[in-house]
Length: 233
Image 1 (cartoon, one colour):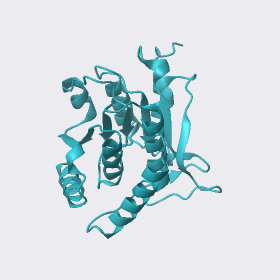
Image 2: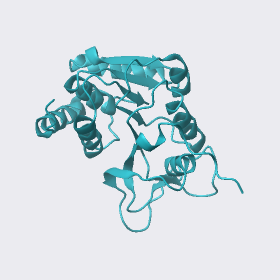
Image 3: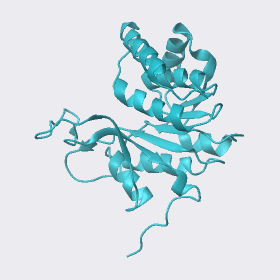
Image 4: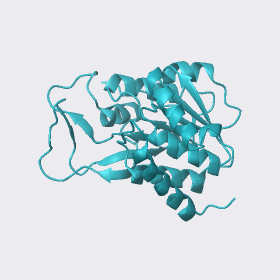
């Protein structure tokens, strides 16, 4: 297959800019993040391998992954616990002629993983649901509960932190990833890095860690047998 990405990246940028005119749309994921994870799939995955999205929210990443699914002659499975998010995103996909490649699942990733049987190894799962530590850990466990582990896992909001005492209910994608995969983990940064200088804490007591990437990609090839055993004291 043709592994070039320039034409796709140009079409993706045009489509993501068009979303700004869609009523009710608010985009939080950077175009760069979506282009970089898409380019990886085009370069490394095989035609027809499914894509999985955990958390569609208002559909920006869903639109990008639907375009990628069309490029790869594949199917996107988009999962969200919010019916309102699915309905909004489904309407937007229909508006832009991208609905034919997407199957929605109303529920959480662990439930999806327990029910779904993939005949082909998924190319990638994008984990961008609830960012609290305990939910990210649950999503990572669900990833390995799939009948065939994906080639790659991408995580958004890797730089997001909460000021104050640590809590399993606070956003901590970084901590959940590194605790789950262990000290030998290697990640590839994707997207935009957090601004340098003192962190700016918002009204939810959250901030972006300075200089830390918006997201990361993990090559799951070393983990096809599962996650490493937890360290013991």
